[in-house]
Amino acid sequence: MTEFQRKLLIITVIGAAIMELIDISIVNVALNYMSGNLGSTLEDTAWVITSYAIANVIIIPMTSFLTNILGRRNYYIGSIILFVFCSFMCGQASSIWVLVFFRFLQGLGGGALLSVSAAVVYELFPKEKLGTASALFGIGIFIGPTIGPTLGGFITENYSWPWIFYINVPIGVLVAVSCYFLLPNSTKKSNGTKVDWLGIGLLTIGVGSLQTVLERGETDDWFSAGYIIVLAITAVVALTGFILWELHIPNPVVNLRVLKSRTLIIAAILTFITGLGMFTSIFLTPVVAQRLLGFTPSQSGMLLLPGAILALVALVLSGKLLQKGVSPVAMVGVGFVLFIYFNWHMGQMTLDTSAREISITLIFRAIGMALLTVPLSSLAVSSLKSQDIPQGTALNNMMRQLGGSFGISIINTYSARRTALHRTDLLANITAGNPLVTQRLNSYTSFFQQKGKTLLEAKGMAIKMIDVSVVKQSTLLSYLDSYLLIGLLFAITLPLLFFVVKRSKTQTANVIVSDH
Image 1: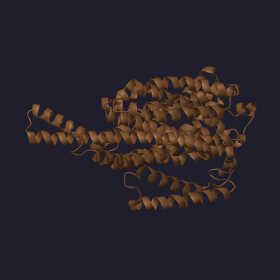
Image 2: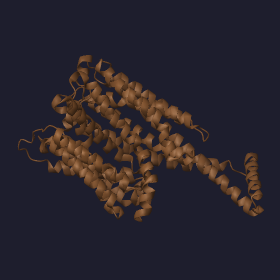
Image 3: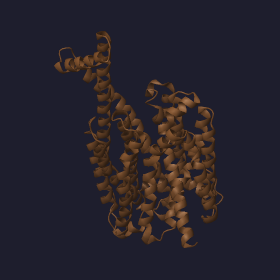
């Protein structure tokens, strides 16, 4: 392979990974358009997000197994073709459930684009430059979920929602063609062993049920809905059975024996919290900016731009620091501290907070995420044998996705309940004897009378204005509480770093992020 071919293949597979990660969040801002166009409720339309997340989390831990059974080149190109075909069919969907079906299949195809892309990138770099490889791939992990909502908003506002799916078609075709000519063949490693169908079935049922509970719980009031109870029980039974079965058979679909590594377990927990923070901050910040501060989708996207640029520099720097022997534990610690500060500062916002102040605060988030992405992956595999690295990194990637699902679910539930609580507290202070309330009510009444309204009409409109103000303030307070809760979760898990098995600088450098 020539140097040009090597660079082209690196760009190709990183582009594929970014495309997959963008699709996790690109549809978020288009749900209202889809709902109106397809004649469905917003709750039903939300399954477009849920189905993709379920498929992703199911397939990611099986990536290593499927690669061995089918051969990496066959599995990767096949997954790209499935992803592209289903992207096109999503754009063509004429009903919400057809869209949900193809979105699920799209998620199954997309699952390979993350782990296998990482493996290809790391193999194309010599050991002494694996830090650079880690940073390059980290750019994709960081950029994908960050620009998804902004890109989705731009496409939906200027074109139509099907184009958020059609955009994948030309990119995916180019990736598939490039990989057909450039991606080396890999031999199958099945060695005639039987396929672990029971393990695949238990994992699919367990993770699928769990993801559905997490994604839909808040919408359907959790355990007041019968199907949520059934799915929660199903998830516990299926996942328990999956764990016992996988530890029992010699050739499991997911080799859980790698979890004997204490370092991997700790890294997986920290990756879970990192995924929670990454996805909830992307979810919360645009919501606050657009719903409460009056920003447009484009303005909300611009808030993230300065931090994203600096994060790219930090990603490259983190890879080089690891290469020079800097402990990933120390870098993860700094990343966690920066993320704690970001959430604490966002928890102090007011309705008068400027775009500049939010943008500066988001820089701490971006650099914190950059310092977590590469070192955490390095830490996860640092105590594993070379043959266990693919499974260890697949499990670690799954934990990131699960963290995002848990985080969104937790924040939706927590913010809804805190909104109700803050509204009750604020209404308790709105009494006839409160001079500030009387002054505000008289001011609104006078304003509407000057607009030609009768005294009775003006008073009614003034009361509505106060109610709108209460709703806005209580919603803001609930989101501020949500930021502080995320920061607290980061602070609680930070001490886990003290329990990581210490390794020499040489050992750490030899296993710098190997997601393959």
